[in-house]
Length: 552
Image 1 (cartoon, helix red, strand yellow):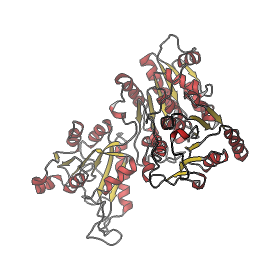
Image 2: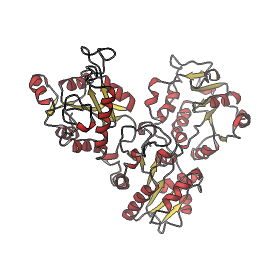
Image 3: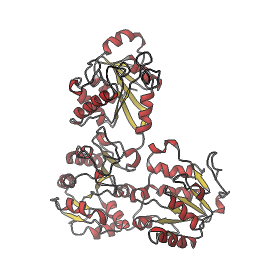
Image 4: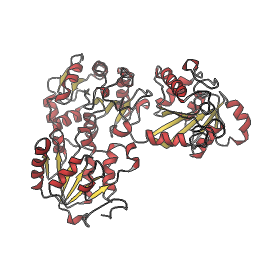
């Protein structure tokens, strides 16, 4: 075991792995997070091969750890509030642990480890709890853009400990017996395909795809596969489960609230495919090896997507991800996903063993195409102030659909010096961007994000008159988008109609396509001796075809 890196405040961590006999892990509260914490248990076992591991957990997730072999004990909380905390601490004192790892960022999780008498206590320096920890690990600045599994693993990595494998894995030793018993009423023959549906989501209604859509997608798959349908979920999700079950025409069983977590794992291990929201059940299915089709809306797949054989479907709108519990504008990000698209994603997943092209991004850094706006996506019209004046370049919808179908994020990055010149306001630019997003959303091709630079080095007045790094040929907007949206700049391309677009791409070593629409033909004539490795395309559709065929 190596010494903690510099910058990690520590007080008396064990010097050698052999000195650690027993480790306490405080598990996350939510089921999905608990699944994503499983690599931590593996990493601790590798780091401390002679130590036993004890898990402390809320009763709602404690049963999950019954599926983890080799744990010394799983200790459910004794109750809620201060009395429950003290009673749980008394129970944990009897475990005589040497090291505690507080995975939740709460003050209470660190306090519990302290009250339990664990001498060495590890956790992120959050929520004022650093005095309770003997190793208070600073939260990395980049952590907000990481997948949740990587935040947990990085806590161990910051101390020089093994982080475990990234993908959580669960085994269900008696999956066949438990699942067949629960599903006996609908499985007329052994080996009959099973479509599982998890329509709940504990965070809030904004994360839930409509029950009638789940039912329509499940019925479509049931007809095509000759499958039965099982609706799964917790007792609190019984309403959503019942709404799906009563709309299904195929043989169906509603298991919501009727399974323990090990039994849920057994059913999901038995299923042919799971249709789900962003939920705990989705992560259980991925961990037991079941194929998953997940519908995302207000949350970010880069942070909470399933890690396994999965397809993620989103309908991109300008306001997503918002993380609202309830949508104030009618749920466009979820309602834009159709039952036909979910069924098609499932078919592609099962046929190819991999997600279909239009839904193949499963988390982690995402490939991206950066797009200039005026003259590239929509026709050049001077300083655009009114969304009514927007006209799409012919072929733009097909081009964006082609790129979206190959798994690329679409991010618009545009210079809008008309703001600095006093010809329009930032609100005008935002309104035009929103209008463009609405037009493209009707075709399922709305960009994931819009960025614009309102500055100019030589025109206007402060704060807009200034040299900046965001205005192209600077790469500031591209870098900001990559940070904020988890984009992979090693798999990025830029399309634009100005030489400054090509220069911005070159600053990051990205391939670029100069289109001849907008100002492109004029720019090409001016810089044709400098194009180098930049691709020259007639329009955005030609550029998109060049990208999907492999620009490098």
